Amino acid sequence: MKKTLNDSILTLSLQGDLVASNVKNYKTQVEQYLLDEMGNVDEVILDLTVCENIDSVGVTFVVGVYKQVTNEAMGFRITGSSDEIKQLFKLMKLDEFFDL
Amino acid sequence: MDYKILIADDVEMNRRLITDILKGKLENVSFLQAANGQEVFTILDKIDVDLIVLDLIMPIMDGFEVLSQLKMDDKYSDIPVIVSSAITEISSIEMTLEMGAVDYFTKPLSPEDMEIILPLKAKNALMFYEQQKTIAALNREIQEELKNAHDFQNIMLPKSRDFESVDLFIKYQPSLGIGGDCFDCFEQGGKLWFIIADVTGHGIAAGMASSMVKIMFRCSVQHEDMTPVKVLESVNKSIFEIFDFGSNFNYLVFTAFVGCIEDGMFHYANAGQPYPLILHQKSMSIEIIEEGGMPVGVFEEATYQNFSRQLGEGDSIFLYTDGLFSSGQKTDFVNWKLVHEFAVEHKQEIAIEPNIFLDELFWYFHAIHKSDNSSGSEHDFTDDVAMMLLKVKPNNSIKE
Image (cartoon, rainbow over all chains, first blue to last red; front, side, top):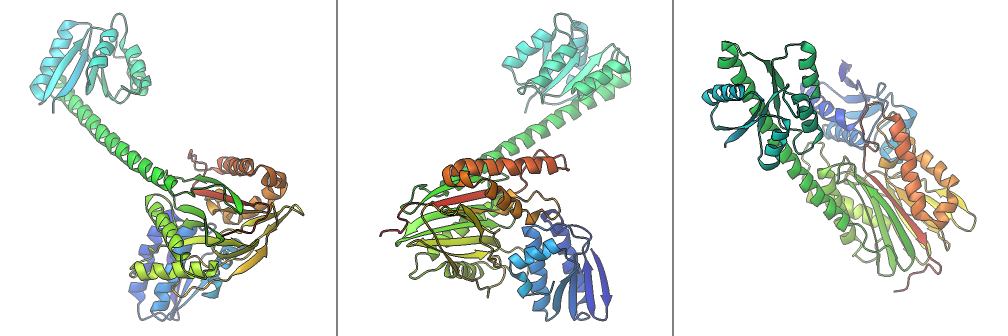
């Protein structure tokens, strides 16, 4: 996962699929990045451009990041998601909570 | 513990020499001797042996034959074998190692071989075997636990397949013996209630969670005036009340579709399950129930929507979890469309032979996953698979 901080916007770019086998690493990294940048960030963007596949554990991860970020009064949105991933988030009505 | 080492050599002096070398260097060992391959198996039939030191050239049955038979027999295939031979050709040694020998030495033995090398090789082989036995015992224990959990999960499957208002057909295959998918169907207060749910992840933890889902579902419908929406919202609320998730991401999250049939009306709410299908018997048309909703356990304040459809005699409702069409390959989570296409092509089976339809659909995706499997894994389905088909009986209104 790559992180970029520009104008108080922290972009977290996944470097692979959002599936159970990768989620454990992503969790650790996100927690560390948020800790490192605490106080410097107004919005977190999860960039899924490279992500081709997502499973239920991946969806739970995204929701977890959303909750963690919004609990800290930061904004959250997703960019770069494929049409299929958007379709899945819409099926689960998660697009009501964050922009895709 | 006393380790038993079997020395197989047709020359008595060699057997005695190797025994003496190892006896002087290893503790807690006892020795057995065989003069040919046949004697090896006679001993193995009666005594558990922890290591075989095997000469390759012997009368009656040589070492190659012994090694080959040992490796083909599940009872003996794990016993470590150290090959001893006067043969120094690399090809013979290579062949025995390929056949499964763990190590080798050549005769005559040098003083270093006797003092250091052979005892070390024997010690390493015994330790390796000991570790293997421990792992095998742990595996057996885990398999036994999984079997118990699997049996328990089977007990929790719907008891009846023949309800007053519908016939129920199910197919269930957990990916690890126990799974996070669950379904239930029962009659209560003049209504037929059913649920299909898929807990995030799979395996033992998901299996435990799915048992809780089923219990929470059963408890929630006990209340007066329940609707599918109220069931989902009540279960969702219970999750946040009962479980302390803290700040980590390990939520009890699951997708679920809850339905209720009363007086021929089908009421339902969807919490992120793949779109179910209805076969309308009269028109022989397939309808997709294309209403979604967020998974349960994600947001405490989650709300759901209630929908209703009129059902006719012989209509069938087909529900399935995403394990059916997801193979872990890219974008395959939208492959529920393939389920729809398959159902359209097999409408007659849904109407007449629902069990055959479920089987054929299962094997259809089994074949797709097999052909997609780039990882080389033997597993066809990477997730739990649950399918449920309810066929409305004539005079479908349920009498109290």
